[in-house]
Length: 176
Ligand SMILES: [Zn+2]
Image 1 (cartoon, rainbow, N blue to C red):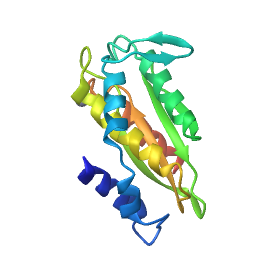
Image 2 (cartoon, rainbow, N blue to C red):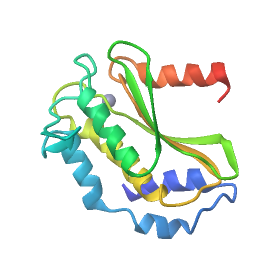
Image 3 (cartoon, protein in one colour):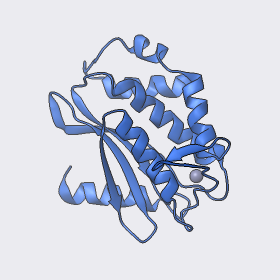
Image 4 (tube, rainbow, N blue to C red):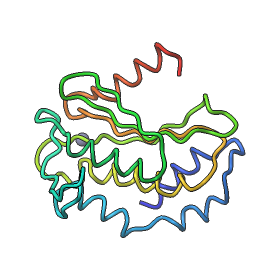
């Protein structure tokens, strides 16, 4: 997992856009934090969502993933990020945490994972990917970055990459 984070950090910080020393950031990666997110998203541990103690037992898009989406929004908001959503169908909802760049706010790096799952629990598809993105958000949100970073959680990957496709098409149309 550290290799993945190293790749993510290097992608974000190349072109001399260093916020701070990369190794320092990697050292802040916390396996317990990562595991906690996987456990919460895959129904192993209960979570408090909208003031209610509950368990996320499924994230299948065809059922609707409202609990997951509210969970992601609360986590991103807790890191002080600008939370935005993109609703593109009855059940389809992308969730984004936006960290605006200080020098180049209109140029963005995307760190993303799909938040839906094919069936119940699904720790490795894709709670683990969401946890990696959330851990990256936790660490980088405490830094100041030249470029905007979008922490993206796409919906309906299992249906055919619908959420990420929608974001890509919207970005092409609006040129941002
Ligand atoms: Zn998948």
